[in-house]
Length: 78
Image (cartoon, rainbow, N blue to C red; front, side):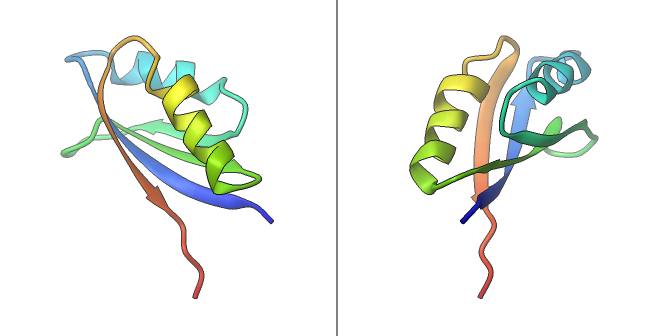
């Protein structure tokens, strides 16, 4: 089983491209794009379970320099 999520990220001014590039190198991240709108970077990530996904977000994504806020949106298939 694979758990997937989109992570919406706000960054310091002018840091979106740098943050997207750094996040793209994180194991478990399948896509990282800098975008325009209320969020600066959108990331797609996957892990084996919800616990691993949480650890990925808290220990690998949120610790990167330039990130001010994240919102994690798990993908749900009904």
